[in-house]
Length: 137
Ligand code: ATP
Ligand code: MG
Image 1 (cartoon, helix red, strand yellow):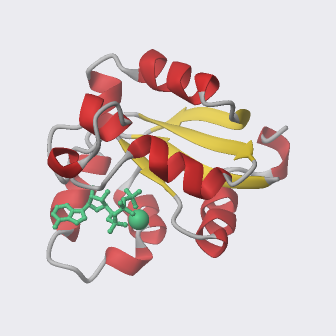
Image 2 (cartoon, helix red, strand yellow):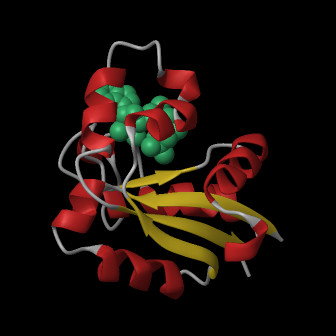
């Protein structure tokens, strides 16, 4: 049993797709271990995306991720890290497979609806970055 970290990004919240994405998560059989809304600050965003801070697209990424509320998720299940990334689809919605969350609810490479951890190390770091022991069950 594995845990992973997810975000419903500002575009998907603004478009009214929180329910659709949570429904897909439940249908896929994940157990929700943590869930809360937040508004990222630039500082929180820089710490979260530490590996991307020095890349050319980072200013655009920070502007987007701080533009409105997000939903933070801790998901649990067999192979949760890989399965959540499969459910999301490719980073670029234009290249994501039919039926994936980014294909359904993403607009472009930046506004791509969801985030998911990419490894056990990043999952552990990201879950504990946003969730304390008190707000996970
Ligand atoms: P995420 O980490 O959000 O789950 P990912 O692991 O598929 O997505 P990363 O390479 O970690 O992709 O990039 C993090 C995020 O930065 C992407 O989800 C996307 O929103 C944004 N991003 C990545 N590359 C670009 C780019 N070339 N132009 C604009 N935004 C980008
Ligand atoms: Mg990533």
